[in-house]
Picture 1 (cartoon, rainbow, N blue to C red):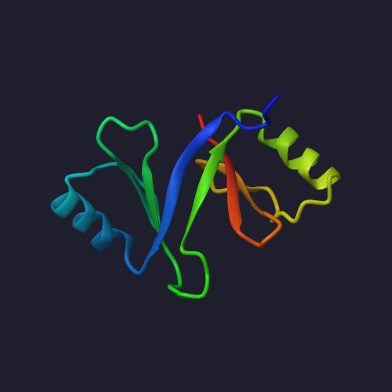
Picture 2: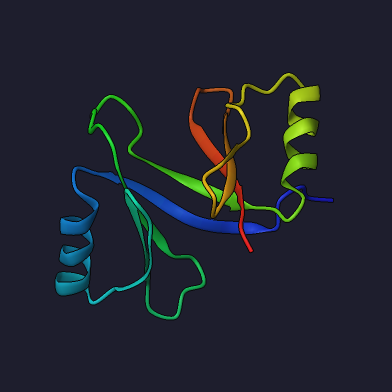
Length: 116
């Protein structure tokens, strides 16, 4: 049984979410489906997996994109990973999403989220 239900989004780091969102809409024809404080969610054609762009530091040595998985049972997933000594961030809530980061064996960042 999988702990995760689907890939929720793919995330890219950008310097300015507003300018980047405008570029993705004008150049690639994506549609902005959600506007957060420092991030935007863009729908990609008929795909069920959107693109999230979030403001942050652009460091070429860091992975600038990562998958975000979705789970309705985010607390259960979080504690199961903690029990297995998987490196995670704290479980966070930004008022819209609950989420946490986790890292694979090679230190690649992954994220799990839940939203209604």
